[in-house]
Amino acid sequence: MKPTILQRSIPDDVVLHILGRLPVKSVIRFRCVSKSWDSSITTPYFISTHLNHNNNNNKDSHDNGYVIHMPSNPSFGWSPNNRPVCTVAFDCTFDRISEVQIPFDFYSEPAQLVGSCNGLLCLADFGSVNVIYLWNPSIRKFKKLPRTCLGKLQNVTLGFAYHSENNDYKVVRISSTPLSTKEIEVYTLSSDSWKRVGIELTTDVMFGYGKFILPVPLVRGALHWLARIREYGRSELIMAFDVNSEKFSKLALPDCLIKANNCERFLASFKGKLTFITYEYNEQPGFPSQYSVWVMKEYGVVDSWNKLCVVSFQRIACFFGFTEYGSLLVFYCKELVEGPELEFVLVDAETLHEKKDPDIQHPSYVATFMESLILLDGANVASY
Image (cartoon, rainbow, N blue to C red; front, side, top):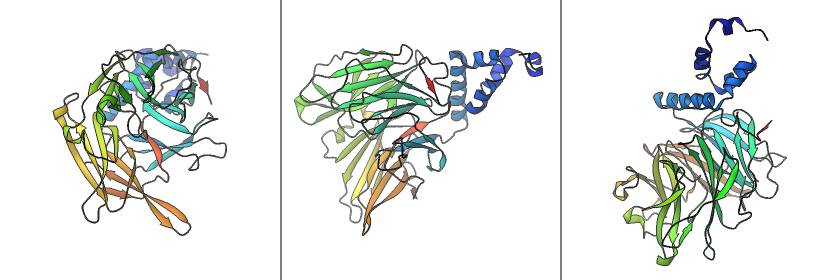
């Protein structure tokens, strides 16, 4: 193919500089211009440069960001061929932008959205989480992970993280039951393999205490789980897994909440800060339930836990989502003659402004989302 006028008149480094600032769909189209452009666009360096530019652009423009959500139950919003349909939406309003169907099958169990990093999604079967996929819907590519080291386990929790030091991605798989030892393994995308990871603790810790409806939060390069020390009954803490060093550490919950009788507890991320959410019944007349949102202002410092807000509801509200920009998602269940009807409410954790009837119809898994080129240079990757 002969060079175009554009290629002859503009140096390659300038071309790549321009391409690195274009939307993902435009970059993909420009792969067809020439073999040299295609070769340059699919290099790890260009993919990383394009990602960094998009991240910096979003920070500078104070963009509200995007989320992707998918029904957490097969009876809600799944397609006839048993594949979930995911919705991309604005973080603060949940106004719908687009829909995309998952391009692979889960044969034995419903699917769960494990997490999202830099536009790359991790999905797994809900039961043993032994079937795991990485998927980038922006470039229509996905990858099924190889079989795990430990095989099928009980009481499994998954975390998905970006490994910043190596520009890599990892999946952490943990099994913890009261009657067995902890089984922990880590998958690394660059090596396309699993390995077992040890844990050095003087006390017996049960991971995954709490609800799994939210992705395991990635904050300051570490994944965080609620956990319980079995020796001390109800003694609770946060276990942090540093993705770079692959070591565990402990973080304390707010002092006033360690022994509090909260009905439900969750961990999340809010604007890059570790966040702790509790649900309890409220004694205030007319407001039977409330959620409290705590933020750790200085990472690792227990005294820096600060109560961001308390959201009271006039009915029993079921929580199912909390976004990076502080959107609290709940639903009410109204009993009607023809059956129960769900009513959804979106609450801004900072302003406490409520948006009723957001563009979401089912209890769902919710994660942050952005467009990227991740997996474009990957091995053993399928296109569709």
